Structure formats: structure tokens, C-alpha cells
Image (cartoon, rainbow, N blue to C red):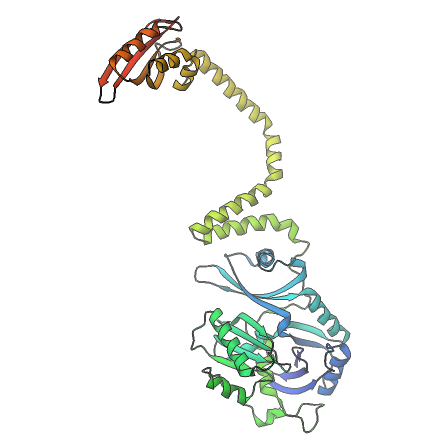
Length: 463
């Protein structure tokens, strides 16, 4: 027998199934404001004639947070470390405070969508402790929004669950998996139909579902009047499942005048294990951060970064390359030191070879001519002479005859205001450190004279 325990609302419910046929059920409402305890759960099981054992447990809708997290193509064992990073960036919560249940689906581009429910670890552990005290062994823990897909006829649509306390849980499903969950609380003086309509429209639009996608309402607060009001507001909902007379019976332990317990609705809302691909927690939930992650964190981060670079566009690649470089730097921090130590002899040999080669070049070239700017600095007389005669020097390069010989002359290009100024400039270059100069070519323009001159250096052979 499969036993489903509903802890999602103020009224505790339990049902036992053989196949999809309920054979035992009961409900119990603890005093207002008191959380479910082991004694109340044991009383509920006794009223239904069920013995403590393994159960499927449905948790309150406000306990979990639903998110769809897009990921690159990764191995299954890489999901938890990557999910831990994404959750910490998304919510700003420490990973060891959260427990995650997820189902992965593949996108057309090869990536993954992680349909995730996040639970606060302390709250889940409190429920587990209560179940253990009641003698129960949970086979799976489910978030109530994920179990609502049975109210839809197809894989896509939006479901509103109305709890006994007036809370409204709207869940959008795409591809049969919950994509977005919105929990709202009743506003005093506002009709329930308006609250439900607002929640359905908000969730449907944010999930990207078309306006004509199916809508459904379920839960203790969903009745024919609510469906009629929603239809008047332009939101027709799917009809509830047909209830067979032999399956609509008073709940065990309830008063004779109490409304009959809708077993079919119980199956639709709580037949959680029979819904394929339903996110559920394991029997022993573990926080997102586990001790064994430290050993593989760097390798996983490197692999995921590389996979993400391959799966994203050009803009994303630029950002991810920077992340990849940062990860590689951290990963190779110690490895680089080790490789440097092992390759010290090779590095020393390379440096010595480079130094020997540099020394040979210096011997072959002799005094290597400096750049034109260096010549102007080493020969301030040239610049002073040019400035005195208002000559504009554009360039100066050294002229060397033969390999290994000293520079013997400079080739200077510039402009002069007129030929007289150019002639005075050339004559003035006969004093040290120069041995004279002559104009190689010049051109007369409207604004002055452009020239190229050769300046002989003192102590060198004239070219």
C-alpha cells in the first residue's frame, strides 16, 4: 500500500492507495497556530487504520522556492557544485542553509534547464524529526506546487491552489514541470476570485505561457462558485475531475455531518509519486555544500567554464573567458611553482644562451646607431642650431658604412622658412660635434623650403 501524508495546510490528511484506488483516508485539524507534531500524526494514522511505515510527504507551498536555472551541458555529478554557485549568486544565501530538489531537461541548443525547488534546511529537518518521532520513514518529500500538475489535462498550463487558510499558490507548468510558483496571502476585503485571477495572470505572463493556455483551480477553497466567478472575469478553468459515488465517502474520524472527503481530488493533488519527473527530496536531504566538494571544486569549475564558453554567444564568451582565466590561475598556482622549480636548469640554460647571443650581436654590430630621437638628445647642438635659424627638424637617422663601423653622418629632414635660413643653418654645422653639412635635396613651397641634408660627425669618416 502506498501512503501519502499531506502536511501542506492547517488540516492534516493521509490516504492509503492500492494502485490509484484509495482504500483508507483520514483528516485531522490540530489547534489553530500549532504546527503538526508526532502525536497529531499518530492520531491521524490511527483514524485511517494505517500503521506507521514508509510514506510520501507533501510539504507546505510556502516552504519551497521554485526556480528554473539554465545551465550548459554538464555531467550529472557536476550539477550540485554548479547549482550551489548559481543559488548563492541568485539568492545570496549560504549553500549549507538550503536543500535542493531538481529535475533536468535538455534545451534545443544542447544546454540544460534545471527545474529546482529550494528548501530551507532547518525547516525540512524539523519536519523529518517530527516524522521520525511518529514512527514514519519518508520515501520522498514533495513541494505542494509540484504535485498540482495532475489538475491539468496536458503538460502546459497554470494551476491555482486555494488553501484552507486562504493562501493562494499559483504554479505555471511548461513541459510537465513547474516553472514558476507564486504564493500570495488574502487581502482583507478583496474577493478570492480577484486574488486568484491576479495570481493566475501574473504567473502565466511571467512564465511566457500563451493567453489561451489551460487554467485550473484546486484545493479545499476551490468550489463551483469560484470557478463561475473566474469565468465571468474571462478566465475559464478546467472542470474538476469527476468523482465516483463509491469513492466519495466521509473521512474516517470525522463527524457524520462533516462534508464528504473528495478522494479523487486527494489523488489529483497528492498522487505525487505517480507524476513523472516530479522534483522530490531524498529521504536524507543533504545541503548544497558538502565536504567532498572541496576536492573537486577547482576541476569542476574549470570544466564548467570551458563548457559554458563553448555553449554561449560571442558576448558571453568574452566574460566567460575572463572567468576561465581566473579559474586557471587559481588552479595552477601551486603547479606553476612546481614546474618552475623542476625546470630551473632549463630556464638558466635558456637565459645563458640568450645572453651569449646578445653579446655576439653587440660585437658584430659595434656601436649600434640609436634612434633619431636619441640622436637629437645626444647632439643638442643640432637642435639648438635648428631652433636658432627657425628650422623644423622632422627626422634624423644615423648613416653607417660597413658592418661594425661607427656612425659617420646623420641624414636630417626638415623645413626652413627660406633658402637664406637653410644656408645659414648648414654653415653653422661646421663646429664640433659636427664636421659640416650639405643639402642633398630641397623643394620650394608656398610656406617655406623642405630639405634633406647630410651632417658629418666629428671623428668619423665622411660617407
